[in-house]
Image (cartoon, rainbow, N blue to C red; front, top):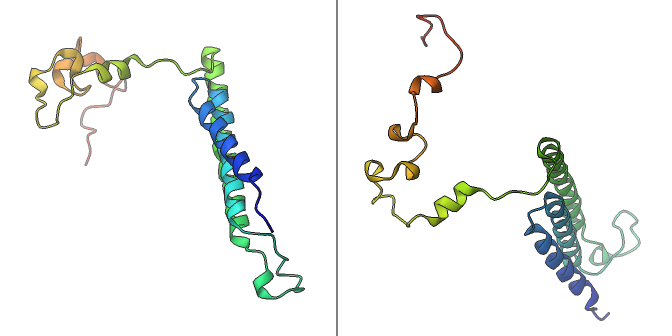
Length: 163
């Protein structure tokens, strides 16, 4: 039996299209890219299973001629995992659409600000010398306004501390 080039080309095409779709800002395209990557991986695992053999339960051939069930079991597991992640991505897309009427991921200005900062080692970092915009969120000098406004809005009775 001579191997064909069709299956590896198809797997490569699915991987390429999946990666291309994953790099987009639209969550729907991200979902489609993820599904294409899952299908390409399933085809890759199926192709590693070797040539088709006979079913072990029938007993018509010798044990060397049986089909290997491990790739098929791995593919079934991958299908279930892909379905679960796709359902989660669909829920995120639906939530994004309901909240903002837009399912594209926006630019995070905080990430851009952090990427533009000068690179420092953690040993060189002194919170007292940083500009207020570069301080960590929990640093006392980075709190703007009255600290009392940041307290919980639940009033506990006096003396109800932990025991």
